[in-house]
Image 1: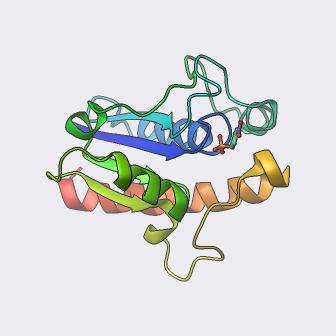
Image 2: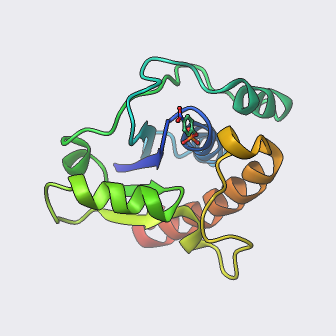
Length: 156
Ligand code: 4NP
């Protein structure tokens, strides 16, 4: 079982978008029993909230389910539970490193590190830009490449 956790600042815009998109890719490839997907935020401001309206509109337009997704904060246990902790930007990585409690096997990377020649190193935060389409363009590209890498690494 491979476990993937997407991280952003508030866990209402970017990382739930990535969670829904990645889970959809996994499901379409019939790998839902092999790959578990979740997301969490660095901050606790929106704990328990559904994804932001902009993320929900975008996912609705693509008929991608976000059922059951509600915001939570990253926990100590996540470092033991997940094989991949994938952040939206460098600030998230710095925040994660500050709270990291073990240095085991977990892969901690930015999503755009999986894309060759990415348009951006960091996924822009639509909470501030209001550009959910551009965020989606990057997140979906990153998710596809991450999925390829995970499949290759684990013979899925
Ligand atoms: P996200 O966007 O990290 O993509 O979920 C944000 C959502 C809320 C806040 C910041 C970023 N906030 O400060 O409440």
